[in-house]
Length: 441
Image (cartoon, rainbow, N blue to C red; front, side):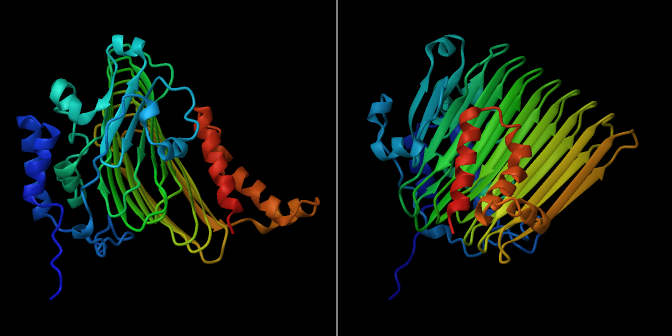
């Protein structure tokens, strides 16, 4: 008789999780409401426009485990050596949090920032100790009933990071959360709630990593709230090992005169899908969205973006660039929306791909939805193609070997994005990973 597979995502598991996490009444109600949506909603279908390039029909949720609890660490010295080695040099940081599998095991913040009211802590801890900072924000920018995966996330999330910067406080050095998974068969739910109050300034880095694994699900949500006149810099650095399916939704709500700049870096995972959105809600708000990706072997990337202009005098600029080799594939689909009643908006969207092998492929689908008659400036550009043969011939004619010539062309291709990355160690890490990808045959 065949063994019956029992899903980890069942009602009794949710109730046990709510008790373990110490949820209050509102948090438990959110989990239960999300679970009802999860049960009622089907898996996203590739027959729909939103998921036509990502088939998740073979993603058997019943086979994943929630058993990923790890011991807390008082200091960095208590963090396992292999995890510290995977972190590498994190550079100068004003605060560091570590999520190991399902547990936020460490959160350290510089004392001066703690005195100024800045928060860098587990979402579960914040829901217990500072519920007013989280409630009304968690699963508000990204509602839990968006898809079956966001509902699953809201029902079974553990860990996750709250970053809260009070009014007019400027955090000079970056804050970072490092999420590391080393348990096969695990489902993890990284969640970031990043709040910058009026006039605040902060740079925050979300980094995801793992060794090569057989099967892991990373179901991530990022919610960014940029208050009036604030400045937010957010980096998502995805460097999962093979065997990881990474599904992420990132949404920024940009208030009046706020400036939000995001960078999405994707090098790892077997399947990586990211939805990145900026809601330019307040007048005078601005958004810059940068992306870098490099795929090899059979990796698949799916990027979807929305630049949604609601306020007057708003501006947005998106630039995503990717290189592909082996049998890797990438799809980019982006939409610029100028809502009715939005005046004097500027929006640009560019996606470019370079194919380093004949078996790699990429698709680019830019869209504009201009719903106002007021003058706006919008544009989009997309390209997919191999390394230019004339350029390669010219470089090699100067005595440069083919491999080095290709390296120069690829770095030149990415330079437009890399020159906009203002965090030195992030730029150096991206450059080092591109070098490593080029070295891999």
